[in-house]
Length: 289
Image (cartoon, rainbow, N blue to C red; front, top):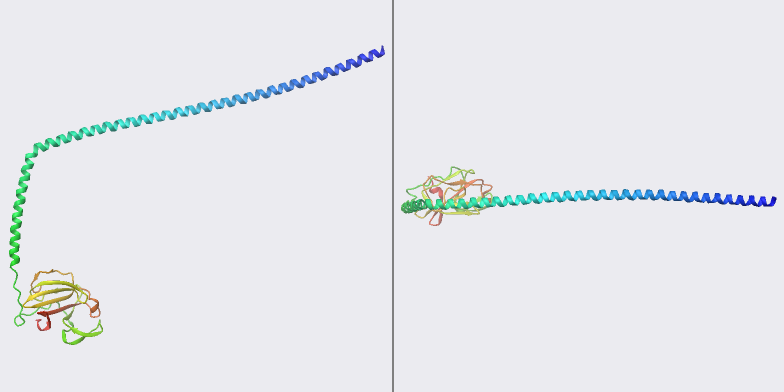
């Protein structure tokens, strides 16, 4: 009996252990299942949130696209309206231009006779003016024909002094004279009269300007015919008041004294005054009064 009781106790104890182990195992499985279910629920929520966010983003993008399409449609409408307005304006301008052209044509037809009459009057006036101009030119030609007779005689006539000043260098063709600027002796076919820059130079006798030259030694030089083979030469001039072919009376202005050329830099401002008779130099001092 005792042995049987022990065996029974041992069996019962093993069964209790088995039951306890099974319960523990079930508890673990239950906990694992609960954890798994909880994790699945969390993932499900995350997926649902992601889907919701994606849906919201798509909605926003769709709304944005619709807004852009709306703006494009409004721009197209504005451009269409502007193009229509321009076409209407162009049409109005063309109509206005056509009306203006019609008006101008009507005016041309209306005033055509008057314009033709005015044109004929103008032509007659132009022809009359041409006749008057030709008559004046003919009269002018007659005046030019009446040129003064040039005559100069040393016995009866004397030259005026072209400028008031001292003689710097005398006329000398029989012996040489000293030129300070050139630092040498040479012949002098003229008288060098001291003057001042801008001083006026007068015509020494009635005559005609035959030439105007620019020479290296005497600068701007004017030659005048005074008759009977006599010529007057004025050098070192500027701002001439005459031209070739002009007739001058004694005392009229020929030009003004210029700065001296490099040949007379030491002598200073002066008038180069020479007299020729049949191409040969003559002492001006014998003819000056």
